[in-house]
Length: 280
Length: 340
Image (cartoon, rainbow over all chains, first blue to last red; front, top):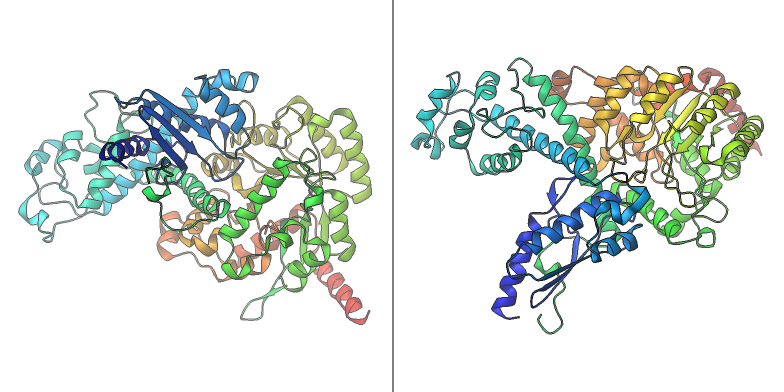
């Protein structure tokens, strides 16, 4: 394989990393849904599969559509073909994809609308899960000196990690609900956290715009874009926890079912991608 | 019968079992093949490794094997066996009431046969339901709302014809409606696992009990919300319970939510046999304790009494089972068997 082709494959893979299963909120690449990737000049052909023959058709279509969009946005890509294998609606979906049809046009009378509402529903769920993870992390994570209990402007003091923090020296108390719900977006972004926390924060910030209005000063709002009350934070987190339970149910099952269906185990890697004949 | 270490007897009613036939010669098409393959996926993913069956056994285990797995090797005192037809996928049906009658014949005092109906069968189906109710003395039915039928990919409980069937069920004394939610309800642009239709029928049919299998997962939040408002909605633990083995933290989360929202009086054990066998499920459930931090955070507990209710007392209430009388019948039946 030439350097050029290797580079292009990596680019396609990165584009696919941005496509998530709407229900599981994880990249289709990590989930091992992609089982074939071929690149021929400016043409990209992607094959994908799902954990069962019965996986919801709407989610399958959403993912295929997102793959087509993300990969098609690469400057050198002229044509993208996405094909779903071994699925109850494979023929229909593949026909729709090949002809650039919308979901509704693909399914005719079986669909009453496009998938925008469904997509939005699951983006909100993704927002909620990611927010729950971050809130729980911050509630346990010891706040650096000067953060806890102070009003939002006090945050400016800690916009840079203090030496004590970066070196892991003993911080003070954990953050309180009052501090969390009043925290501003810049303060959240500036909060010194460890690499795990940084990852959790980044995932939340990637979805924050789903529910927070543009220019919203608070770091945390609920699904309606409203501020969260400090006294109700506990109940609010419990409610978010139920959203997570659903996603985990599918997540745990889907991974196992995919492995069982295709008789696989081990971790996915680029080796999973079939290459063009003669390029491997 | 399950005996605790202190010698206490716990009466087990397995609320969700099957006696299906997915042998090669009964499979009509690719859909039928994929259906049983998917079940086998569930079986092999969540069962302990040493409990995984060969695929051939899984496809068609038969009544004798079922009897052994539930009542001889397993702890079940009684089992409710559900009917699911899938006649578009299987030549003679997947899990017909006649198949279920075979296991009933082996253990008449232990087995409760549930029927099934499908509103798409129209008026003729209403007559068939009445005949089945008379023949099998039905107290319950299983509904599979995602069953394919010709061009149809399922129905909703709120469809007008479904109401006619529910009215008929009520008249016939069929008061337990087990509902399985699958992923193919039309229109396809909506959330296919939506459980909102259960809410409507539960309000409109106060004399019926609605047992939502696998607790509405993956829509546990919606299900809990409905179940809190509707006193006649119950959660079947099939599919949720097997997580106890490989994903214990996850099971802890689910059971604590269910105890918080529904409470210990509204949950029913079900092995979903032959997807899983009851022995390991009951052993692990009996050994399971909620961690203290979960008890405190959610204000719930899974006491021995709660376990007894979930494993049998709740189902006994729904199906009018007199446990003491039943124990004697079963003991008498067992003696006959030994002396036969």
